[in-house]
Length: 579
Image (cartoon, rainbow, N blue to C red; front, top):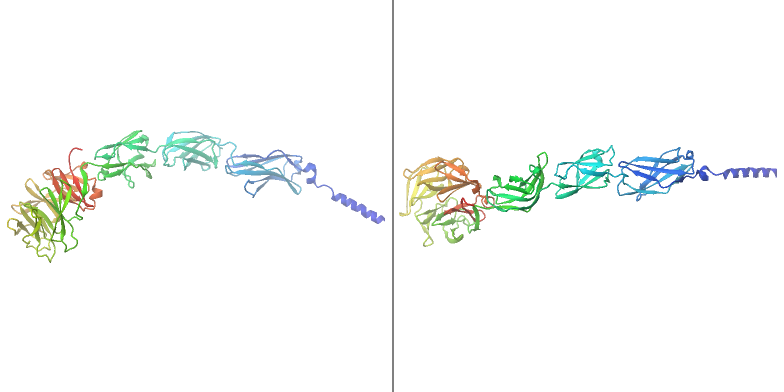
């Protein structure tokens, strides 16, 4: 019995010892958190603070915070360790996202158990948001430096912490401190006022600012139909201080400048430069260069276009399809077209400049070739000298009255050689290339005579002009030389005119001679042996109708020259001095 009593006593002691409260279960060892967790969000960090009661800080073995985005279930835990006060805090170096909601709760570990506070919620927004005070300028152009006065920035702010958006583009930050930010104006196509938005470590400023984009604003032009030396006024809004960086151009690829006459806030007055003298239509753009003067890739486009007018005019389409030979007679032009093949007949046409109309005439019995000649003599037209070994007749005339082709006496010379055929003093002269003789045809006798001739190196497209009763041959193949021919002696003498070798056409209007080099027009002064460039006569239709050189001078009547240009079009040139 005594043994049983002893056992019961021991059991009661053990039970009593087993029922003793652990420290974390004692009421005075359970922390009670005071209020919500305090959060302070700065540009590069966040501070959490918590207070508690009902617990001796010495019994807090560890404490800290647990936080995350509210929508995220993965928490981040920060431990502090033992503490000696009834409050604790932690500072984390982290950049929070503005507009995103976060949650945080504090915890204290007592013994083997963690006690948590109620969660607190906050947004990733700084306590004191940065503010824009002012800008150093009211307008700016791509590449300009803009200085922005600010406040509420930390002293350790860096340019890499700054994002400034102007319109929809980021402006590169080149300087930043607690009071000022400097950025480079980005390129924007938007005219007018642009919003300036500031973000510091992705935290937006409390306000925005505005700056005007100094792009040109083009509204109208004074005229779109201009002569060579006309001025054109572009109306709109401009900044004269940028005239060396923002200027009108007409070429999308090469950005060729217009000549600037004046540049004001409301008007830019321009003139077409020499480079544009040959272009019939010019676009109107503004090119923008960087402050260093390097041509940028930015253009301000407009739908405005300038059309040149003046001394050249496009008439109705022509019937001939290809250039072969032409001649003028009685104020009308006759044209030998390209035949279908080497043995087919050649289409033959007449052009009346008074009515700008074409008439189809009977085909020439010969096939056409560049080696042929078409020449007017004594009121009739003669065609001949085709390089065709099977032909039995190599020379024919077209009779205007009967509208028929009539065979004539064959040229006795071998047709395998190049021949230069011209009409002089009611006779037809045929100069044989590479030989020392010529043949002369007399229409009255229908016969040929041969005589000696020391002929220079002429080209197949050589033509003759009469100046002061003397005959000149154009075009030679030896430099800038044309040749004067003496009928009495049958000799050629060179006349050197610098620049003639680069010309591609020679024609007469009203006893004046002109030639063209590309689109440039020159007056030929045979007395002084000079070419006189006349810029206002430049052929502005050249690029559309003359470039492939498939054109020929038809005739000159009064003060107008007629050309059959490329694309089967008739083009006229009237060099009046009046506009």
